Length: 427
Image (cartoon, rainbow, N blue to C red; front, side, top):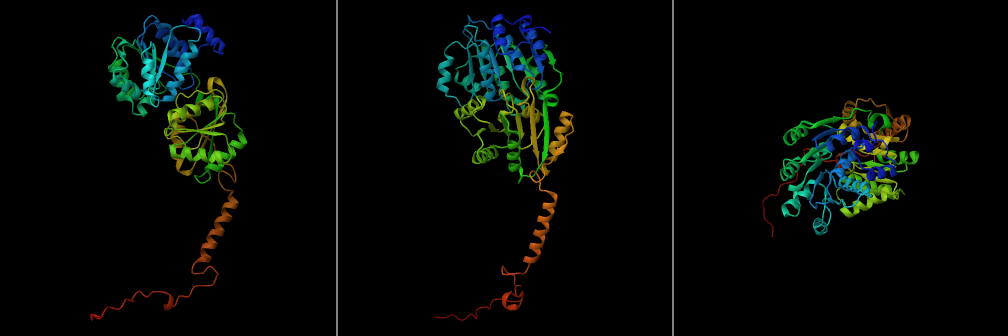
């Protein structure tokens, strides 16, 4: 297997990689970097956690001309968090390289601050579609100088409804650009986009053992909506995770669960769309630094969120498709490490569980935690008997236990009608 120097990466960047413990290229890096360096368009299909960010970042850095102050590379991402992460990764890689400037452009930032930075030389722009289009309309970003375009997490762009914006952005670039598309799956809409804008691309697919099946222990626990919170707390006490991400379906449920965790003494933070950008950044900073143990998040954090040391992922609400499941649990077991993913399922969730099983070609053993995730059967039957007995005894009885009288004096007759007025007016 070739090393990074043999792939064409300069020694200064290779030195940085070694200092970070990155010595051997992953399969997606080994196959993608030479194609990008040759100037070819690339379609790369690989799951999360396979190292695809460096697969396009490293060759882009080799091709940047620091003598030119124009935007030479544009990287589009679906979320702010991913834009921040890629930007930080680029800045790490150029610690020993002078002159390469990178700017992250995404919503929630101060526009004036971004405008000020754009006046300087910015060789690489990492952006979300909405904020980038805002700058294009303002005339503050010129994409006609872009030589390399990366569309990262293309299938997530599709799911979030960003493909029309991506289309508008590509229209602002020259047809001579080099285009790279990275995606975990290839729906027909993504293939259509590729056919429209790419020229004879190299198709690279990594069919190695997947992080989903091999590196992560996956557990499914049967519970009920009423017992879900108590079950989660029991699991956290039992597992004692170093860092854990808990996924909820909605912002409201994430906030409610976060508040409950804090109220019960857990060191928790929340991450969802209702938070301001500064609060989201602070939450992520605390989590990365292990100052908080638990991060309660919606799927905004499911893609591309790479935090070292995440030992556990809890699906408090089951994801509704296999793809989301893969990307959620891929937040643990990073870089070949071990991880544990626990999914809580209520009876109404079984349809989604079957879809996930079919999508990842894995059959789950559904576990129960007796007396916690579901009631103890004997206790459950006893409680039900007592409820039925209580309901039967309470029929037709007062609170003091005496049976209510059923004479006409205390019940209305169906034939009883109010007396009609005789019609005589009174003074």
